[in-house]
Amino acid sequence: MADKLEEEVRHAVIMLELVTPRLPAASVGQLVEQLRGDGHDPGEFIREDEQAFAKWYLRVRRPRNEIRELRRLSRQYGA
Image (cartoon, rainbow, N blue to C red):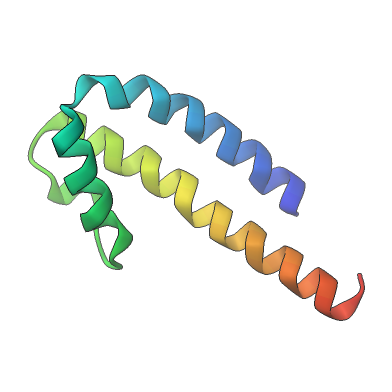
């Protein structure tokens, strides 16, 4: 399961790297701060570039959190 999630993350990172240069650095920092909080939907952002960044950022962040949890449980239960 973690391997499949890692593959999804690799793809999402590539897409995020393509989208990020379209935004000013200050905007990227602000978006990351907003997205670190829960409950943000990429559709909430007005600019298409911001929406794309939010979409791919979350597609990186969520599976990474799941991978960490799966590995923690694997170590805990010795699987």
